[in-house]
Length: 76
Image (tube, rainbow, N blue to C red; front, side):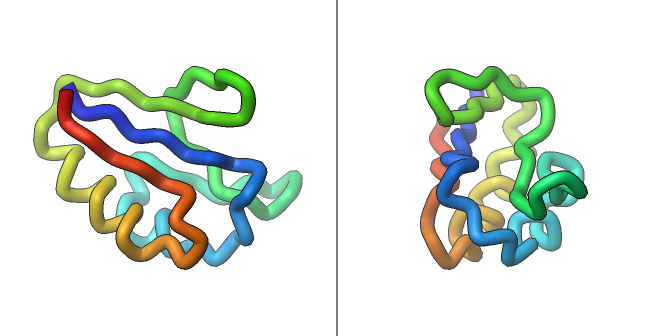
């Protein structure tokens, strides 16, 4: 299981996550911040759980590109 978490409140809207993992991230037209798709929100932490092991590589590239380091990715 691949688990990715986004701290959306701290997003600066740089768009790197969308460039590296467009199938998992979108930029909000409402506030210009990143949205991690198909997530569950828990106190400002948006978490995606997927059994797709190929997702790890894409999500990890997005996390490494994030200048404010608000994306975490792990395999459980």
